[in-house]
View 1 (cartoon, rainbow, N blue to C red):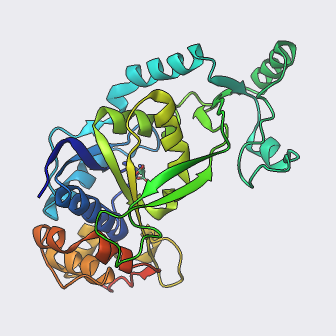
View 2 (view 1 turned 180 degrees about the horizontal axis):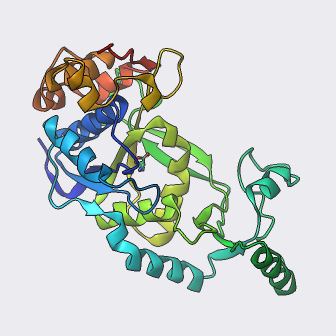
Length: 318
Ligand code: GLU
C-alpha cells in the first residue's frame, strides 16, 4: 500500500447533537477511504456554530466505540479563531471581499441576472458606491443588524475532482471524474459575525493536511466553492468523495424523530456495535462485516461507486 504521510482524510462533525447511524456510516467510509489510500485520518470538531454542551465528547466516544481511530489530538475548530480571522483579513487586503447588506428575503426577491443559477447570490452589493454602502450600513444598524462579508469571486464556476459520484464501478480504483459547479460570491462572515462554514472548513482542511474530503452528498454543491477558495488561498485542493445520505422510510434525511437512530439508542434496542457496522456495510452492498477493521478492508471506491441510490434505515423498535 502506498503511504502518504503528508495527506489526510477526515471526518468533521458539527457537535449539535448525537450522531445517527447515517453519520456513523459516513465516518466509517471516510475512515476506510483514508486508511486504504495510505492517508492519515484526522478528526475535526466543527464547534463554531450550533454547539450543544457535551455533544462533541459523545460524538467522539461513539466513533471510538465503533473502532474508528484518528490522529490525536482532534482539532476543535474554535481554537483556530485567530488564524481564521487573519485569513479573512488577508483576503480583504487582496480586495477579494466586500460587505453585503442583503437579507435572505432581499436575495430571493432580487431580479436574477440571465446567467445566475437559482439560489446563488446575484451580486447586489458587489459594485455599489461608498455612499450607498454608508446608507445601507445605517439602515442595517437601525434594524440591529450587521453586514455580512462575501467573497469577490472572479469566476462563475469551478471544476473539482470527485472519486465516487459519477465514476463507474468498473473504472480503475484511482479513477476520478470532474464536476463543474457554481461559484458565486458566497458568504465568508455571516451578519452575526460568525465566520462561514465554507471559509473555515477550507482553512482547517489545509491546516490538517486534508487532501481527501469524504462526506455526505448533501454537501456536493459546496465542493466547487470550497475548492475555488482553496485555489485562491494557495492551499491544496482536495479530491472529494461524496457518499449517499441515509434516509428514513419516507425518503427524508434521517433525524432524531425517526426513533432509535443513535448508537446509545440502538444499543438500548438490543443492537451491538457489530450490528451497527454490519448494517452500514450491507446498506452499501458490502459483505457482512462487523468490525471497523473489516469494514476498511471492504470499502473500496469501486464498491462504494456501485452502491448508489437511496439508503433507507428502518429503526428497530425497542
Ligand atoms: N460539519 C459538517 C456536518 O456535520 C460537515 C462538513 C464537511 O464535512 O465538510 O454536516
